[in-house]
Length: 118
Image (cartoon, rainbow, N blue to C red; front, side, top):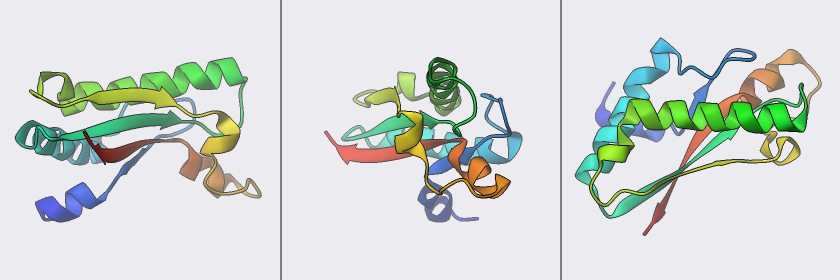
């Protein structure tokens, strides 16, 4: 997989009730960290999301832990000139797919990496 194709992936997915970045996604997160270290003019907002199961308070905390985990692995805190913001969307806003089957639940358990100019 090329560096460009790794960086094209902008979401990290999780099993139910898990905030730890999965081994399969660690190279992607590390590639984004390297990119940010090399491009100080870029910033990224990490948005930790959950499916709609669980209380809003619990899901906000889980979303925060997911975003924090991505930040830690990316090493973005060491990037000179990089800004990483962590935020978690409300559950209803974060849903990519309406919940009809369990598949959409898995698509909604994620951390999104949203790039923007400084």
